[in-house]
Image (cartoon, one colour):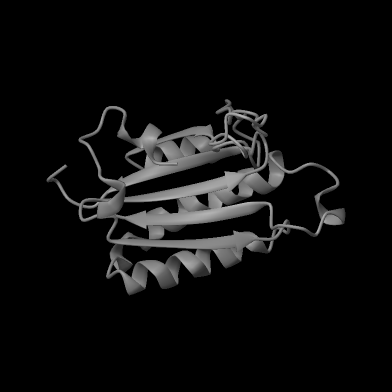
Length: 166
């Protein structure tokens, strides 16, 4: 999941993660509030309370987009696995928020009319984080050459620099 984050940035060693936390989110809009609470608790545990406002805004937008655009219409009838996951990963100089969803469609930033009540989520993500992007999730069976790999959706991520030493 971390490989695309290395493009254009100094190398990061996945084993050097100083903290990580994951939260599964059910396919309900109330999950956005749960994602914010999870983010507040996690950032507080990591001593990053001062970053909460920007990070929570980005987490809210990424989770809302996953719930609104990435879930199939019949998700509620499939109780197997929560369809959206929020991952928070911390290094000494950066924090990454990543939202995994089952869609293989790329996120698209669009121009929203001034009167629109939605449509600015990715613009906000871009404005409040230091960088963002997306990539396909690792496929099921990708590590076994004898089986056909089954796509697993995508991960949309946002990176926050925590210091100027990057």
